[in-house]
Image (cartoon, rainbow, N blue to C red):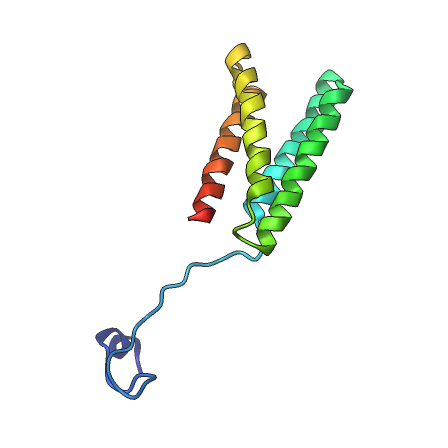
Length: 129
């Protein structure tokens, strides 16, 4: 049966007659690649910030938050509805970096991380819908 015949709904469908219906499928990634990318960006940013400024507490906090974001992405990869840890991490970073951006008015790095964290929150909320 050709594509045009299927689109018209020809007889002889899977249940012995009537119209056949198409299910549209969206490509689903087996892993939360966006979440892992976000975690890698946070981790890389903390290492880069340490190289430029030399702040050990900032490095430790950045690596810890990057680890939490990666673990949250791992959990979302296993269950699309398990977004609590990822949502908490993104909300935490959006709050901290948003306050820093408001004080310093510098896009890099506080404004960028705050904006990406807000986009991550939006994405995670859409995963719940």
